[in-house]
Image (cartoon, rainbow, N blue to C red; front, side, top):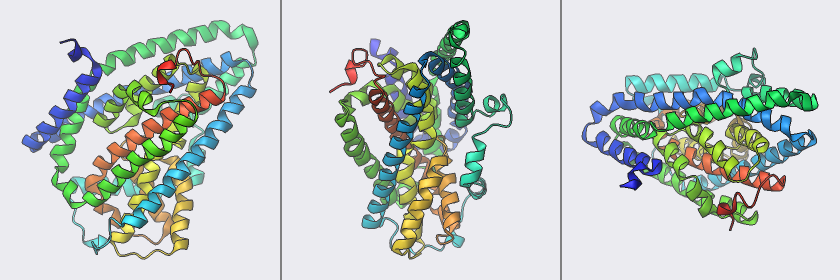
Length: 418
């Protein structure tokens, strides 16, 4: 029974048992949400110090700061191109299939439960506050410590890059500091290892809550949108990301097998952030240099959200179609232009995509924001697809940028090569 000791198998069992629990005892399953939330929070508390120590140690060890600039602009260029492709694909599929056509819904007449109405109000209010300027200003933390207290990835990355540059300029004198940072990050990875043992329980609780609260009936009502999003994400992964991986000498299938634990963890918790520490360590052990991993992966979690990009365009057009809101080509292109900006501010946690969608619809002044209530019931299920696509997209981005920068060791990462 050695296979039972495998985390991949344990998480899979947890997901299956959670689905069964939600189907058989739906009422009793709703409170189990706490198990998933507790696990994600436990992982999130470790992300900030891991990113800080990894980035500072990596930049300080680079020596040549030109390498930092090279990694940064290549990563951002990659992020922008690939997420734009994802947005366009989502727009085209939604226009061709028209999943919301024929519903003729009046958004003001949609009745939500008390808890769903509370969630809806929270998301839409947060969306109204999202602007490009506000997002850019939010990158700068109020204090050095507040970035860690709030756990904002971009804020931590910002101060980590500044700290790394400052240490790199001091030369050999900082070696004791970088050695200490290396030991500290190993300690945090040790804690991650301990926390990850609870992943099967978290996956069980999160999946039981999702099925118990929303049920499979919610899927039937909006199966067209669900099917479109899942199908588009699958095609994007195996066609677009598969081509990018193959073009750069990697086998997408081997990459997916290598990160199978992270994929199941993301599926079970509906958050790609829960898999970030494990993914960072796995990329380092697979031949990517510590400095590049520390910069590309955390930045990708804010700027390279392929699954969220697909979801945003498809959901926006779905609401327009369902509420009989006619959009001209110019209006559709303006939505695409707005999403090119707002999608970069989408959080990689559950609900982030919904908040960004609310911000986008508010900015269009055309599609009724109240129409988002149509998809609130299945947003949790859609979150699974976009989180997994985001994770795979960032993994491929990490490998590609590392190879471009000649910071990938083919010998250590031979299990990922074609």
